[in-house]
Length: 190
Image 1 (cartoon, rainbow, N blue to C red):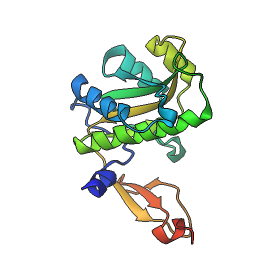
Image 2: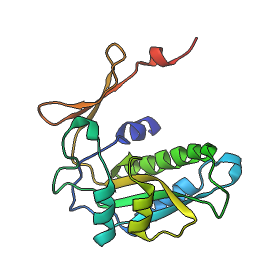
Image 3: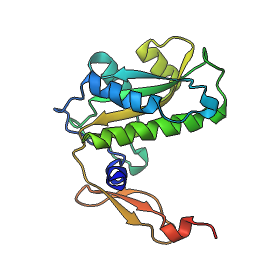
Image 4: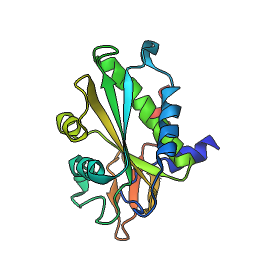
């Protein structure tokens, strides 16, 4: 069953904008991340929910989805209905690169939690932290590390074995998103 959830926890870039995620569900995702492993158990991460209004529009405008494809994603009218912004709290401990591991762990837990409830998301690391802080009026001790766009996916994402080590994702003529993955035998070191 975990494998099925992992397979559903893809990066989605098109959503059914009519399906909202209520705040209680977003808090459940954060609570799952909160109880996950943390470097030295320091737990310096804080989470900001963005699920409507001007803040949602502002964060969406600061986000870049698969810009390497050269197309506008999400398509107009297919935007995510929420974001969770993962922040580092310098009031807990000064930022060090080692805490980026915690960001990755917690982000994946949020993605898995969303998939388990029939939602999907996309981790976005390209947003300017200062612009995100300003848009959300975050206190100075919080620095955005990662955005997670969330919603009800309305696109198809297909995993496939990479050919000759090529791992660049692409969209086909039917707008299906293909994600080449290195083969198992290519990632196990003997």
